[in-house]
Image 1 (cartoon, rainbow, N blue to C red):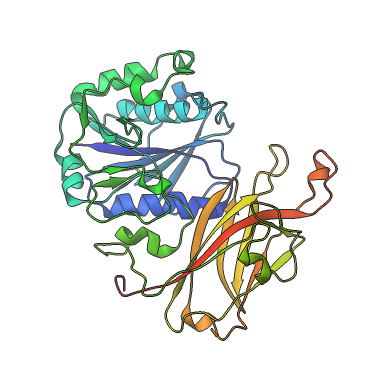
Image 2 (cartoon, one colour):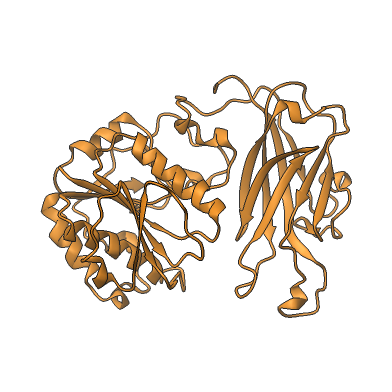
Length: 382
């Protein structure tokens, strides 16, 4: 049965194409889901990936998608303009991309469709079998957290392709202000599948679940344990070293050069370089670092902040912040001395004064660091 797997897409940088979308493509290709082709539908990204296995096709309207043909294993349907999201229940960019993938499937004669968003992962063999073996219906799993179907995963069989096509030809105006999770004409909700929007939590995705959605793009490699051949999340063999950087918090005493005066929620990195003086760290092993930060961004002219992380002399991470994020990286054992002289250096080339856009704040701001945590890995992962 010819099966199409597709997602909606938008990335402001090459880094996010790699961290979010290429990781997802690689996971789909390795997941034995029975797909014949993978399609990403892009909502006007300012940059595009240069993947050798991917055919990039530019379209100007959903109707043009009907004429697109490609034999490539991966197809990127690209819109030159961005529609984005206007309100909590008004996201014309997502709807156009969702409809485009559906129209591509019908026009190209696919018999089954799996709409799998790029932050959604199928983790268990049970659910992989469910995808391969289901031959009818319009199905989604269930989100217990939000008490509605999890439409980041939608499986549409041959008997429902006409219904999918009809739904995507409806005027979008009828969906504005409507909870999309309850608007889709699903025929079955698979409550027997275990999973949820597990990426919204602070901790790891637990073992034993069938799926996880809202998986963040920029966490430490060990966070994505299911991609590494492991059967369970990473364990840690020492208490975490945790600091908060709000006013009067202990982390403030670690701040070296390149910081503004601490505020209640955190401390701003300023100018081009900010330094943290680490205390003596647990001996031996790789450290996983996570941090929560709030970027200085502007709707027009400053869409994100790039931050490069250096542990002493070694570059260990690069992050793109477009909103408040928890991000992570690993710090190799050989990058640290662990004698109280280690330094974390944050290079942030996009720092800018808010006064350039409006107001009178002339500080050259990058991101506000709120929390930072270091954990020494145990032995659950190789």
